[in-house]
Length: 169
Image (cartoon, rainbow, N blue to C red; front, side):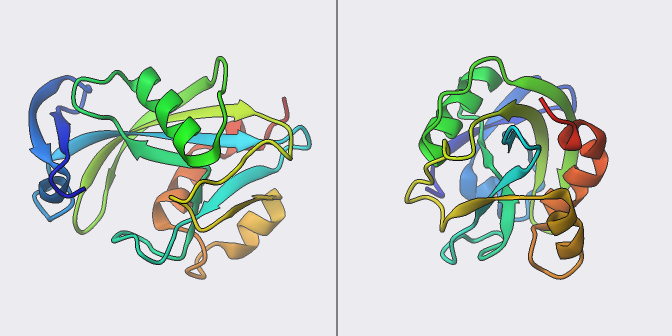
């Protein structure tokens, strides 16, 4: 996986080159695009995935329902469809785009495209890429903040888009 090619983009999302996944995650700080899908059930609970222990970044923590890289030559919408199918076995029609932002950690920089969709509570089927998943209430999410249970990326994204992520329908 470290040799997989990813697009390198500017802060507007325009491709300016390519680099390997290993380079993008190895401290080069090359900006690369990712997609996130926040999945709600009809009661307004958010589905979070549990990152497996074998992941290099944030193993064993709860994170956005779907998150993944945009492949080289792939558009954001196609990446979102692919990742949603791969990670939770869903085909989501007309996800709502709620925003984008730059995320920076100690080892990487990402241009994150954030989407929201609603699905029945029994719809997600976590793949082998995940260690599991479940729906969380807003109170459960708030209670887990700052305790190392959630990824820092999810915590920041939830704070940034809380209004859009806590409304129903």
